[in-house]
Length: 218
Image (cartoon, rainbow, N blue to C red; front, side, top):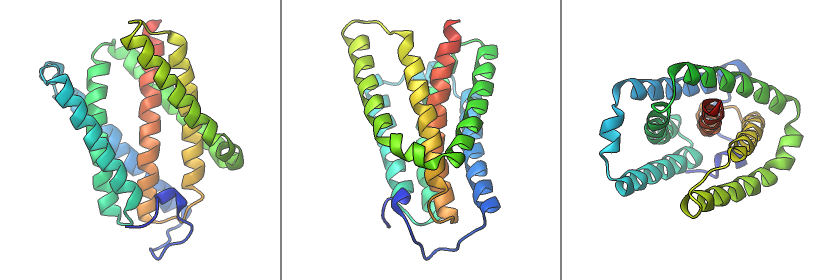
């Protein structure tokens, strides 16, 4: 095990060129999205609804935290990829439950919008990495505040304000730019490419879910 992936400044692993590095990130992301798509097609919402909610969420968080630990701390591409899948699978179950509530046309529109926004934010992350590094702390504080507000609204006031979806979507746009900038600031190795893809995957999926809710209200 090494230090946290985004704190790595040097490595003994093989350095790969920019094209291969970006290709590995892209293929890793595509694997996660494809796996999620297959889960939506083949796992019935009814079977997920029958799972005890407490058991479901304990399993969800346990799998996610294990996956994040593996890909952030490991210097082995295979171990990082296994950790990535421990994140992709529980996210896929959540995606399955959410997209079942929306018209397929809205889901496809949300995918298209998410893809375009992701491309723009990656481009901005490449152009202005210093800016995204400066706002990282603010993004984290803002996200934590929104999560607290949402929990209070849901469990105490039994409501949800649509403006929060816009705020969270903007926050994850910032995270995409930030994580892409960080991905290009660390040594370009196969392991770091997988690790960077895992971080971007979580940003993109969270952005997609918020865009889907925003479009669904229309």
